[in-house]
Length: 78
Image 1 (tube, rainbow, N blue to C red):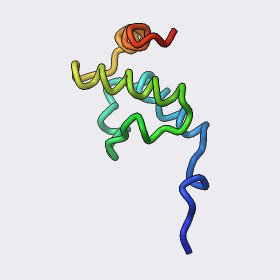
Image 2: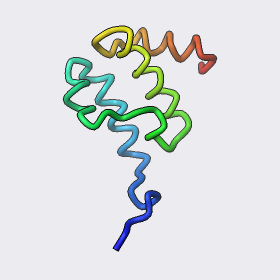
Image 3: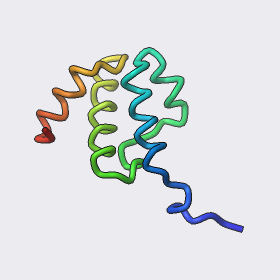
């Protein structure tokens, strides 16, 4: 039996993962042990936030909310 990828998607789960990145920045690598990428998120807004978080992490070793907001703003996502 196979499970369609749409059955594995959950908007609340996406939001929870992103919130955990922002709430517990020192735990980013523990929470993201599966190496999520922005395209893993189905909701467009979540994909944008994930992309901003991943950009900040690639430039800095820890998630930093002001830098995530700046990254979103620079990408034109107010």
